[in-house]
Structure formats: structure tokens, C-alpha cells
Amino acid sequence: MTLTDHQGSIFSRAGLRLPVMLVALIGLMVAAAGINQVVSPIPFLALPVGIGLAIAGVACYHWLSRTVELRPSIPELAKPGRWSHLRRGALLGFGLFITLMLLIAVFGGWQSLSWGSFGGFAATAGMMASVAVTEELLFRGFLFRVIEERCGTVVTLVVSSVLFGATHLVNGNATLWGTLSIALTGGTMLAAAYVVTRSLWLPIGLHFAWNFAQAGLFGVAVSGSDTPSHGLLNTALSGPSVLTGGTFGPEASLFALLVCLVPTIFLLRRAARTGQIRPRPRRAAGRG
Image (tube, rainbow, N blue to C red; front, side, top):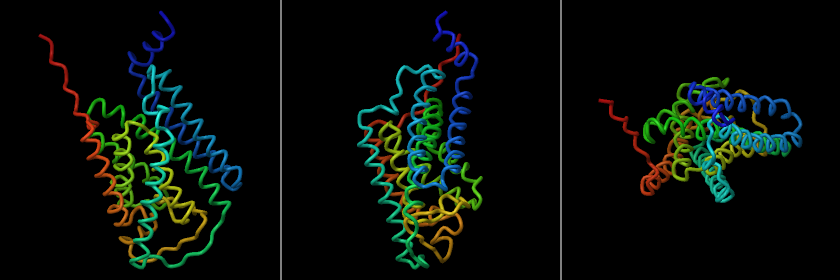
């Protein structure tokens, strides 16, 4: 028996492949978050550390995919188109969140605006790079891909979005509406970005830019986190929660749903036209 055969017997035949991958990727995400917390008070250390964690996360995913899942290739992290997808995702993420904040301002949701910290801006860039990579590897790279193989694209969009939103319930200022909004906006939009390209690079760029614009540019709360954001600007919001998102942050604003709905529909329609919406596999007919 070769080493590959032995690994296959351990992971695939014993049913350990998926649990091992899941635990490893959750551990990777938690470890990255812990390291970011340690280095965050030192902005110009936090930036390279965060970028390093993002690169390490991709390398770990490659290794786990080959070692645990025994996949000879990892198409969702293919190099062709990588920088193009990252750039387009980042432009889309920045554009969407800036649009959201401008809508909140137009309807009177900005209380004050002042300069923040360039150091916080730099530190947030590193942290959000690692957050975007590790979360996309777990939620789209693994969970979405694996569930879709069994349930098809439509069911997986719903399930993965709910799971993505539910994980934000642990945040200090989490609300039920906030987590539902995250599921409907971030979860579905990021999944749509993956489906249309079958690549993680577009959702990674989108995820990074959306979060970085929140915390690193405008300095507002991210996804109900009770950790203060230190961005280039300090933006204080005031008004009804339906407008500003309340303590959860702008992602719980009604405008967030509207802003994210347009690209989500566009991406899913494009995915349908290009044959990327996969049906639920038919079960093999019973024997005899």
C-alpha cells in the first residue's frame, strides 16, 4: 500500500476527511484572529503580520486539500486570473461600502466626522487581509464546495449564508437582525462571487475591501464587534437603527441590503447564464 492509499483509507474510508478539514480550517481562522489581536497595538507590525497570515492561510489550505482531501489540484485557488479577480473584488467591495455610507449620510445618519489614525489604518489592512482569506477558505472554499457537491447550488447558497451569518452571533454587539442582514448581504453576495468565477480570489478581494472600508477607512463598527475600529476617519453615526445599523454597525442598515442586492442578483444571473448553477445530484438507483 502506498502512502497515498494509506491516507485515503484513513481520511476517506473512515469518514474523517471532512471533520479533519473543518476543524483544521476553524483552527486556522481562530489562530489568525488571536495573532492579530496580539500585534494590533503595534500598527506597522500588524500590517506585515496580517499579510503573512493571509499567505500562510492559502499555503495551509493547499497542503490540507492535498493531504486530507487527496485532491491533485485546487482550482478554486488557481493562479490564472488571481490578480484580476482580487482587483475586481476589491474595487467592488470599496465601491459598495462607500455607496452605503453615502446613502446613510444623505438621509442624515452621520453625526460627526473627524480624522483618525494612519497607524490604525495600516494595522486594519493587515488584519482584514487575514480575516478575508481565512473566512473565505472556510466558508466558500470548503463548506460551500462540499455542501454543493451533495445539495446543489441553490440549497447551498441558503445553507452557507445562514451559517456565515450565525457565526457573527458571538460578537459582543450582535443582534438577531444584524446576523440575518450579514447572512443576506455578505453571505449570499460572497457566495455568488464564488459561484460565478469558481474561484476564491474574487470573494477574497470583495470581503477584504468591504471590511477594510468599514474599519480602516470610515472607522465604524464591523459586524457587531465590540472592539473599537481605528481607521483613517472617525465616523460617528446617529439615528434609527434601520438607517445606521445601530450598535451592530452599517451592515445592519436597510441600505446595506439594498446596496448588496444589486451585485448579488447580477452575479447569480451571470452564473446561471454561464452554467455555473449546479443542480442537486441525483441519487443512484437502488440495487436489484
